[in-house]
Image (cartoon, rainbow, N blue to C red; front, side, top):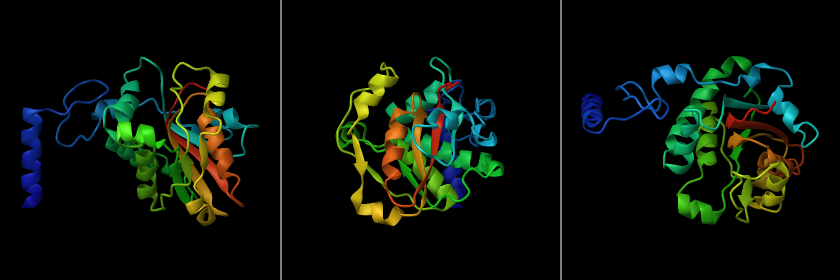
Length: 236
């Protein structure tokens, strides 16, 4: 009864204020969540997880020792799919990111990419940005994975210093911009010893933030670190 009422209310709301697919702009029907079926089917998947020593893993080789790495889809400036990241990060739609990462776990099941992951964590956001934005989008992404896997989400890292935007910076400038910005969260570090930690962020471009954060996690005795991002710029 209550489910029927909720469906009726949802259908009514869609007529009064239709939900739109962020990629194509078409109205979503009652069974579609955040993206329409057509845009979801055409998502430009990287499928890195299906390739040994893939492009993303090569990108981090020699910078920080990681177990494996992948991204769900490709990010290209100006692409309609770029709006997904913008909506998640800036337009108060982090739940779309949580839904997408949970879906990524299902889509990647055959690759066994997530096998052996003990703990999921996220690149942290400094409290000043957290107060302004209201949420850490990467945490939502990480929690979507943790919930889908049935593994704990732990705040393994802390952002202790804000940094200016990375958008218009080159690789060296990005690296210099984030030095000293992150530290281990000593409150939880002892729980992570010997664990396989999945580090999650929204997008990888130069990889400087993930490198710094993964290096910190590797300071915990016996840890193994893998990387997942919702999106990736073309790294090759």
